Length: 452
Image 1 (cartoon, rainbow, N blue to C red):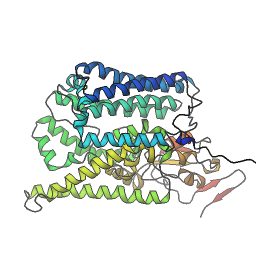
Image 2: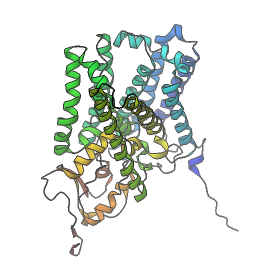
Image 3: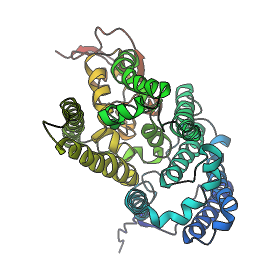
């Protein structure tokens, strides 16, 4: 009697991928050595060999990633998502859950129990003294790991999408901004005894940059501090609407932002995990705009309280700021936003919590030249575009109807266009008129129809 047997490959811990090459196995060995060095560093026994351990950790992680990405460079150009739906790491299997728990635990320790990482932090002292002339803390260590992840996973991303000039250039862009503007420059400013300032972040994402206490503190440091205040204000109120009008929110979310940079590079293997349901879209809109309202009200309350010298609200407005920093700045953007990559996709924070993404999205939806045009007559409804949209947009729904895609949540990453086998989708910056076509013309093989 024939029996049907169901094999849940996503739960397998020992099954070896048939496509794994010698270079990828070598990369796995390098990563294992780096993890072993991490364990030694965390134990505190390697403080006397901090430079050696740091070199092993950074070097082995880098070599491991490069060896693992090597087959992408050797093979023919083109996107290959082989076995992504069956791999335990990329289909919410056991390894994915372990990864989520480890990352979540890492963020919890970084934010609230950093003393547990003291041994690991100390091995970053040589690098920290070199760049900032100060001993390392948990945020320097975190910034170094974060930047390393963007760069080495960026190399992998470039290898995968090297046939697309758009993807190659934008990936180099996020690597450049993360390394220079979000790591080296802030650390170098500390070396000069200047305020630590991140030029690639601004209000409301870097919410405290427009808080009266921070504005006053920066302004009192001299001309550079005044320039920082002006930079933040100009980027928020002038550059953001202008650039979003011309290019859509992609100019920031897919080209500059460090959060988006990590999501596009390290989060690339998980982009198919985003929830595309209508329910998720409704939750997304309520949540992300609620966060924007909260931080806007909080900022206004702080300025109102500052103007009246604390006589109106007292310490209440400061309490708002602290709670926002805890729940949104730490728990949401860090613990959940990155910790849940392997379970909910890499853009959880960008979709549901980022207030800057909300502002950019409002401009993109109502006052922008950006759109993704569709040629509905060529669509074969394969669903690749919707599957690999990490913002949870059901791209196929628009493509089937020949409608331009003008969604506030779209970050213009262009993956939907790249995975389309028929060239249906195209990212464009055209005239604002006619951007939203609610009555599309569908050109089929045998006829032309108009949806009225």
